Structure formats: structure tokens, C-alpha cells
Length: 317
Image (tube, rainbow, N blue to C red; front, side, top):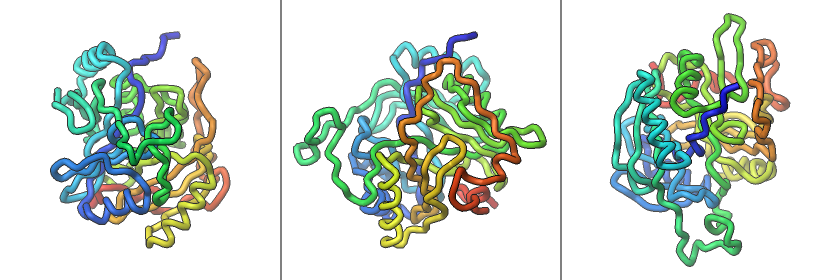
């Protein structure tokens, strides 16, 4: 058995586009409870209270919605060189080196076959809390402020692709990801894949595009400490007029307790609580779900609603 590639450390940040910047920023800060680390031109840099980096969400004013780019941190400068060499040899589209932004140093950008832009970086800006944001416990990244929902950290994102198998090959080749779970449709196609680069159950998912779009975002997810945080969040969303799309329910795949909402511009945002489930088995075998098993719905809760399969950002014709 070939040893897994362990050059990539974790999902670092996601850039989300919004065509209603002020309303989206108000949602992500006042309602969702992320903290603003700084502003730069048309972007705001946000983080959850226990994200150790300067930002985990880059919210950017744009003419439309969706995802700008996805950033992964690697484990060392040498690992970055190895990944760049592998990516350049793979034949996938590359954008080359960029100087980085307020949250990290130079990064190497490349693109999947469906138009999603990724970057890998090593040098990062670790969040240094000012006095009024200093936590009581020195092993936490910043103070728990209890503003809005207040998730603990960035967890994962879900992208859409017309060919999930092709996307799977991209993730394995470029990031060294492992597939922890997948859906195999009756026609033989992969309907979805869940990827990890470490011991989390997943940091990125890809599901089949049903909207004939390219480079689209399905959702971005932050993690809470416990299920009760998500029940409390549902009340907060209700009081603030936020569209609750579905949940709280429990996923069969990956076993996460979840709640999906749309922020004011229409990007789907999830809260999830995966509990203590980790992939510690070094020779973990991918769990494959059949189409019939998936049609049974969630582990429990209501059936998956139609918009969950069709809505993505930016909107597709």
C-alpha cells in the first residue's frame, strides 16, 4: 500500500463573493457571529473565535455570488514545493504564484476542471488578539464573545461539479486528499465525494451539479461545539429574518448534525456539529453509499428538500 500524501495540513480559508456586501457582512458578523480581523479594498477578513489564522472567510464585494478561491495551508515550505511540482506536472490549469493578502504570504494558485480556483500557502498570519479580545484560557485563539451564533471554527465547504469522478482525481492529485465517503449512482457515476487531508472526517465535499453551472459553490460550513448551539442558532436566524432552508437534522453521510440557511446574497451557509468522529484508521476504506440508500433521506429528520439539489451560487441559467 502506498503511503498517503501528507503535504497539505488543513482547509485554511474560503473567499465568498457577494453582490449585497453590507447586508452579507452584517449577517456574518452580527447574526452568524464571526469576528472582523480587518478590511482591505472590497474585502473583509473574518474568522471564528477559535480559528488560529487571521481569517477563515474572505468576504468580497462582487457583481455576483459564489466562491472566489479556496485556500489550503501546507505542512512546511518543502511540502509547498512538492505540491507545486506535482500540480505543474499534472496538466491541470495553473495561475502561478500570487503575493497573498492580509492573511497569508505568497501562494500558488491552480484550478480544477470546473472553474474553482484553489491556492496552497505556507506563510500565514496568526491571529494576535488585542487586550479586549484576549481569552481567559491561553490555549484558545481569542475570546468567546457569544455574539450571534458564534461558531468555533471553519469546518468544510461543498463545491458542485458536473463530473464528480474528475473532481475526485483532481483532489487526490493536487492536494493528496483521501476519499472518506462517496455516493455511487445506479448509472455508475459518482454523485458525491467527501475528502480529507488530515484526520477530520472531511474538509471538502463535491456533489453533482444539477444546475448546468460552472465553478459553483454549494455551501460553506462552520463548526459548533455541541448540537444545542445549532438549536439556539435556529432561533437566532428566525428572529433576524434569515431564510432557513432545511434542518436541524442529522446527515447519514458523515453523521453530522446540521442546519442550512441562506445569507442575504443567497450563498448557502451551514452550521454543523460532527462531534468526536475522526478518521484515525490509517487504512480507512472509502464508505460507498448506493442511490437507493441515499433516497431514504437523512439519518433522521425531514427528507432532503428540492432546493438542496438545485440551488448553488452564482445562480445558473
